[in-house]
Structure formats: structure tokens, C-alpha cells
Length: 467
Image 1: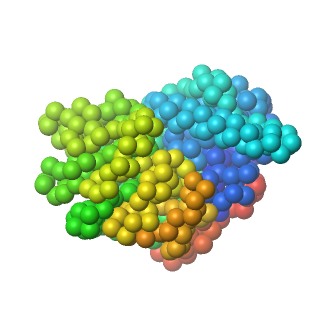
Image 2: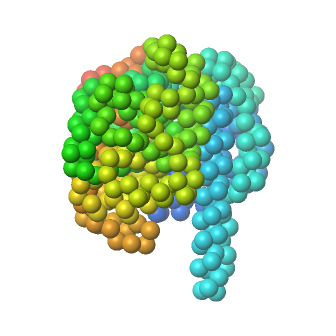
């Protein structure tokens, strides 16, 4: 029978990777994500793949986030020459995100090699290069939602709306193996139904095996209106305190939601700050992609934006200032109060947000707002957990700013939403939990057992099962 190999995002959130092998010779890789967070996890990105990339028939991608696509250029550099399937918007976003990632890999290797040269050590190579990435981008093939397509001998792919970020998809694969048909459904990252711009995830009913993400398998998100009210109060308090507001945000998805919400506050007269800075070149370019694809927005919000003549997301928030250049970014730090600064990276593992930490994190009148999940081992998680000082840009900085974590802005489904989505399947398919920290998977596993009398499996890294 066909085999399913659990290679990544197993008992952890990042590094999504699964291999489907049929006895008829098809080998389809589902996701090729980068591990993020702890140093030992990230070091695994440079290891060889546990399969021969040259033997793969095709690659299937659910959406553009780096923990699902970040090793695709390395896969191509190591010999993969087949098609990479994704939705149209995901193809656009992958170009943006992976070229940026390649630049980071090259710069990190260049910086490391300056130190190694002085110490007489051998030079290191980047994980992959811009050239590798450009070659990989030439292998993309865009598919529409609901378009069944044979992607390898005996393997049919259909994408369905996942509602996570623009272009995100639930993956449905039908594998024919010696006249036996098996239907595998991978949830991808399911969206939070409260997201203002995204459509709700599609409901599927037929599957033999389901792989369900469980990033928030342990809890539900707060009501979106309560979260909005909390954010509005934080902004009011920051205005009274006389400090700035820092918001570390993922460039794709979270940032666009935040701009929408802040624009809503502005239209309602609830935004006391006089300037909002979008200090992320990637997010600025992502806004342009979102603006080109309004047709994939939630129909109600799409109609509202059209009615108000809004063609670009930025136009919804007139006080938004985009700062793509380093000089514009550095100029923000001359502002000591009254600014909202949205910058990457979302988990504070790098990017421009750490520069703003240097100028604001030690100031008691400033506020730091985390609008989403912070993975173990990241700087963002350390701050959320209450650390007193952090090391940024080779300096030790006190954490004196007021820290807030908002529970309703996640782009991921909460526990009840995961349960509500998966219970629509008929005939109780085999169920496997992926994309979550082990403890959170266990909590979701228990709820599925108690509420639905359905036993969910938690695979081990490298586990192989028959489809």
C-alpha cells in the first residue's frame, strides 16, 4: 500500500514536511518547511533530507509561510527538478518570502565567515542562495481552489480554502495504488473564523486519513470584539503614558489584519496615536499582493472596501506611513511618543523589531503588544514568559515596557474551531495531530476522545504508516 512518512512539524509547530510514496512509484512531498525557534531545531535545517530530492515526482504546498516553504530552495539545490504546486496567491507570496529568506541566508553566511576567517576556521556556505531560489520559483505551478489535478501518476490534488492567510489551502490528495483509492486530507493551517479579511475554512466530509494542525490545541481564542476592545484600551493607555507602541508582526497575514483593525479604529475616532509606521519591507510588498487579490477576501469585507473606494489596504488607514528603507526605519527611533510601530519578525527572532527594542523596550512608558503565538526558544516567548532582560544587537536591555498578549488575533483556529471543523468528516477517518507542541496535542487529543469518542493519533518524528 501507499506509505505516509511524518518528517516535520511532528510534536512541534514548525518544519512542516510529509512524504507520500505509492507502490506505483509516485513520491509526493507535502510541504517543505523550515524549522524555527530553538537553536537545535534551526540547526536541523542544514541537515540532508531523509529522502533523495531527485526522486520526488512533485511537491505540494499549502501556503506561503516559511515554516511550510522555507526549505524549497534547498530542495531544488539538492536535486529536485519537478513541479511545485500551490494556489495562485501562494505562488506570488512564495516569491516574496523565499527571496527575502535567501538574502538572509547569504548575509548570515557572509557575516559568519568574517569571524571564521579571523579565527582561521573554514568558511560556511549559506543554507541556499538567491540563485537557488530563483531556480525553484521557475518550478511553481499555480492551481485554483476546487480544481482536481493529477500531479503524479495515480495522485490527484485538490485545494480548498483554509482561511489562514491569503492563498492558504486545505490539501486533499487522492492516491490510487494498485486499484485502491485512498483520500488524504491535510488541514494545513486552519484560519481563525474571526479574521476580518479571510473567508472561513472550507468544510470537507470525505477522507480516509486526516492530518489536523494543533497549534492551539489546548485553548480557544478570546472573542474578537473583546480583543479589539483590549487593543483599543492599550492604545489609549499608551497615549496617556506618553510612550510608543511596538507590535512584532508576521509580514503576511497578521500585519494586514492589524492594518484593517487600526483603520477601523481610525474611522471610528478610537485611535489616539497620530502615526502608524509599517516598518517591514516584506509586509509592504505583501500589502501590494493582498491589494491585487481582493477577490479572495471575505465577501462582506470585500464589498465594504469597494463601497468606500478602497483599492489598497493602506488607504483604509490614512495615517499609515510605510518605511521600506533602512534610513526611514532608523528615523522612527527619533520619535519618543505617540507612534505605533509594526515591524517584523513576528517572534522577534530578527528583523527590524529588535532595533526598536533597543530604543523602546527599556522605557516604562512604552507598550509591547504580541498579537500572536510565540514559539518555544524565541525571543518573543522569553519576553511573554516574563524575562527581566534580553540580549539584542549584542546589548543587554531591560524589559521595562508594559507587555501585552492578545488572544484573539491569531490566524490559527482555536481548539473548539479545530474540533468543529474535523467533526464534519463522515465515517471517522484515521486522525493524526500535527503542527503543535506535544503537550497541546495531548490536550486536543483528550477533548476529541471525551467529546467525539474519536481517538486521535500523535505520530512520532520519522514514523511511517500505510495509507
